[in-house]
Amino acid sequence: MLGHRASKSRATVSLFVLVAAFPAALVVHTATAAPIGHGYVVTTYDSLPDPMALSFGTDGSLYVGRDNSGSGGGNADTVRIHRIAPGGGSHIQYGAAPTADPDAVIFDATGAYSGVAGSVIVGGRPAASASGVISAIRPNQSVVTLAGPSAGFVNPSDFAIDNAGRMLFTDFEGTGAVQQLSGGTNSPFFSPGTSYRDISVHPTTGDVYLRNTTANTIRKYSSTGTFIATVVSGITGSAMAIGTGSSTWGTTLYVGNGTRILRLNSASSRDTIASNFVSISNIEFGPGDALYVSDFGADKVYRIQLSTAAVEPVSRASAIRLAIAGAQPSSGATRLRLTVPRTSEVSVRVFDVNGREVATLWDGVASAGEHEVSWSGRDAGGRASAPGVYLARAISTDGVATTRIVRIR
Image 1 (cartoon, rainbow, N blue to C red):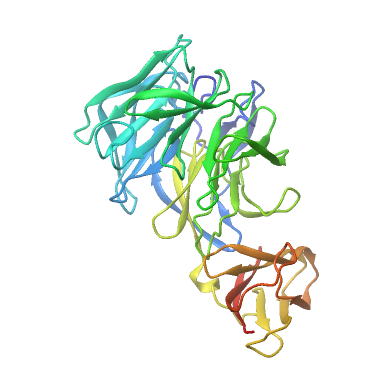
Image 2 (cartoon, rainbow, N blue to C red):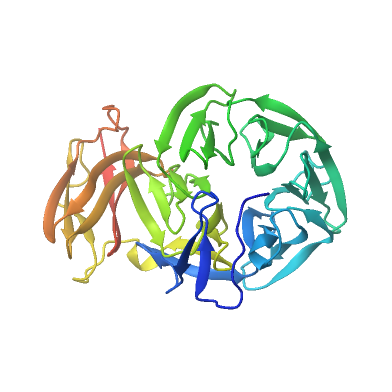
């Protein structure tokens, strides 16, 4: 994406340049340690230059967009993207020919948008051009132009497939319209009135989330393009993804906030699930019920997974614990005993078996020691929850603890 990233120093690996929300002003930092998971495990998935957007193929291969400014070149340089082998640990440059500014990528499993199943669609803005280009890398790695150069869009910056099967993309630096691509032809879908960089689609409601990296806001639109609400303000940096609906992630919105990954529980409530990144450029859910992070400043892709050792309540004095304090099953309120080893930020939430968040029981600082929390059996809107199995999960910097709640009539 033109104007998206500043060059990284390759001479001194301890220094990097972080562009906060990608303005002109630069801040120099010192990389001191690997990322830290807060109740999650963070591992290096692969090391590769200038990682940007992420998109998984059906075989588990991970296709990674690229911005050559990190290697001393320009934002709009013509370069090849990367493909990381299933499971991580090794990568190749992908595509028989380089493409212009290929920081936005998406895998087209069926060929509905590119014309050939298994193609990788890439988008960007060529150098010194006022028009963007969208290309497809075929499974044999040949490269074809799908759309552009076109006055209809300037800089394709992020792709998403919505619940109706439309492939949507944002036009950073362009008219502000959210475009759709079908069979190699682009057309406007709806116009939110300002340019957005990131786009995500809710897996169940189909609502479209757009992120503005200039105003630092995330806004929600219906599946037909009608504005619903501003979800959150004051979130800098770039990258967002909505949970897949699993018990680990729910359907909560997760964002990259420069050096941290945040879970946005509401407009005013957020948790840090991992920190100490250099400069996050993209996040994407993928294989192994994991969240994958491209860290442009560190030249790495990381994988974040729930700690298997912390899925069930643990007995070590140094870890957070959560246990049923009353009778189970229950038709009324459920009492829980929360044990916190040290004063810290703690969240306790209830999820259904599909990973959807039902209620928040605690969200804030908890002093060291034991606390009692209670779930009334009602959701955040005050509605009685159906009989069945629910999971209560406590998360803090000292780990994750989960216990099961069984509701009966």
